[in-house]
Length: 249
Image (cartoon, rainbow, N blue to C red; front, side):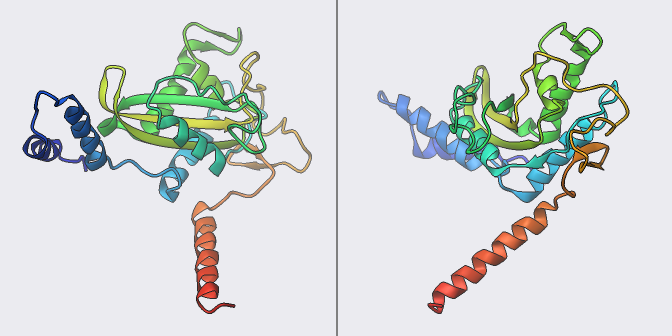
């Protein structure tokens, strides 16, 4: 349900009246609108994670021409936290730390990134990710050429990328968009974008290793991950640890 803007605006008008020194009060009002009006998901919300990871895998399995070596994607907490940290800057620009060793991820270097910006009340992960996938109309696989910007699509279907972490952040304004949302997905390994994004062929016919299995038409070395089970397990361990501390065991 979309938050009620008029109510928060009325609150600001009543408690933060404009005065000769009211410029900072306008900013404060916008800050309260941001706090009171946002209902965007946290980057570690299980439902949110499952939504965007599953959609990435669904779209990667449905590329045309068919892909022989695209990898199955799973969630990465470090990538999602990097996305959140950069999103808080509320700028529509590439993260300048992605190529620096250990800056964006403790293990991977050369992190990939896709960014979507739009009105906060219009955001869904599906809208953002499908807008990136729609850039395939500007890309010729045969010629390996983009007629316009298609870098988001190329990263989305980059064969070697198998880790993804996303975050959405509310911003009072980005460019000309007020009450905006910025949605960032980071990928590892990131795409270099200097070649075709994947090898054409029968699905899962060109996986890297002999131990790879075909999971939802994508190459994978592991079984499908149930994020809810992982989080329940982590919560159980945390509860047991707190119980142990309570009884000084």
